[in-house]
Amino acid sequence: MKHFIIAIILFFGISSMHIYSAETATVEIPDMEKIENAVRDSRSPYYYPDLMKKYLGNDTTMTLQDFRHLYLGYASQEDYNPYRTVEIPERIEKLYAQTVHTESECDSLIKYARIALSDIPFDLRQINFLIYGLRQKGETEEANLWEYRLKPATEKRPKQLGLSFILPTNIIS
Image (cartoon, rainbow, N blue to C red; front, side, top):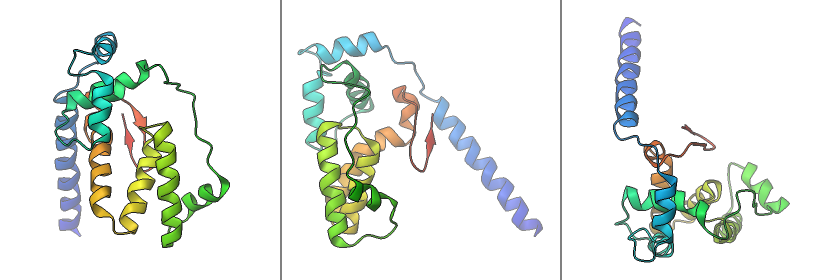
């Protein structure tokens, strides 16, 4: 019992040191005006249409700065509406609540996630359901690409991106 308690204390102590150093290492407040100018300037390496093309093309060479400008620059796009929602059909909403899905249910989750993401490209909930559905169907290569897209928004990078949000299973601030 004594060894178990010592192991728990060591685990949490080491874990908290790692989290603290990772979160505070490169935190910076984004300059929204500078980002907005960069994503609107067609000569900039952060020109929004070019970044979105790289993102949608599964370009794995995108840097943290690319993702920062992509995510934060989205708010300065003409069609951006922070109150826009995608109507979720009742049958799909029921699928969200299930823990096990058939192949046809996974097809429905994938189809709906793709529709929603075509309208709201950074909807983390839909990206998660798309990854889940693809993995359930054995389409791991595409799931890995979507996971790569999701990674900068869900790992230690949100602080670096200047973002703060809640995911279904994680709280990131």
